[in-house]
Length: 109
Image (cartoon, rainbow, N blue to C red):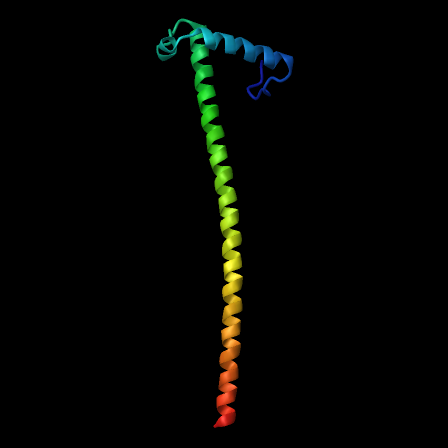
């Protein structure tokens, strides 16, 4: 009994299968893809391969989008961290100056 968790084929066999399905897809028209014949296993296989290719393309697109968003968020986080440090330094400067003015007011009073 074959295992349901098969590893993807690699090497020469996978290349041969890919070339085979590439040739099959090239010979099938879009009308044939739109209306697969339920009794024709090759047409069903071509439809399945086409759908898998479409989904793979969508997943690659989603991955690229998520990578770009990750980089954007990293840049934004770095910018906000720098802005926060600058604001904190400004608050310390203002606080120190106000403290000096209070001391000066007490001494003159």
